Image 1 (cartoon, helix red, strand yellow):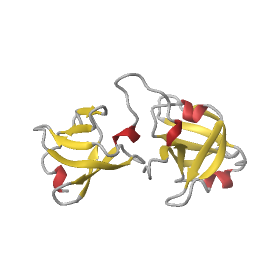
Image 2 (spheres, one colour):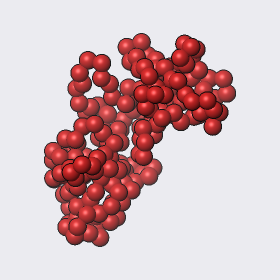
Image 3 (tube, helix red, strand yellow):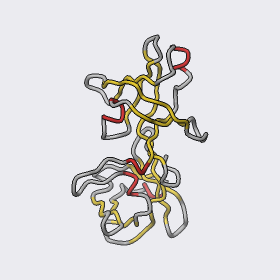
Image 4 (cartoon, helix red, strand yellow):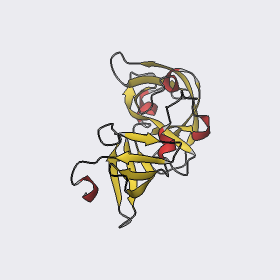
Length: 176
């Protein structure tokens, strides 16, 4: 979850790996270098404040979206086990540069939400991306918050320049 546009969750530690303090990470990012290139990262447990940690090495598991990474100061399986379910964060102001027509998920927050019929129904207020990429949308008519899967079939158009996105939800999705 992104809070106050300061942090971006890029991975979730799912388990420890081996006996030397390595952890297995589920990637929530399209940028593999976040798990391969050593440098500063941040870890967060639930709603606690993020803590700074140094990534020292990492590699991608063949054929998977998971990585095995090593942090400085984490040298045993017991210590690595304590990091299970921690989120890996990067600062939102350190986002990689993108090509034209590309955007960061963070840029979706505060976009107006329109239907295929061009009716404005709400706005994106947050993202849930720990397990799936979901848009948290607040509907204008009842202030209800709904989760919308961020997939092409349901969100066929994102127009960052004009500050809106179009959704085509399956029947009943907005009533959940």
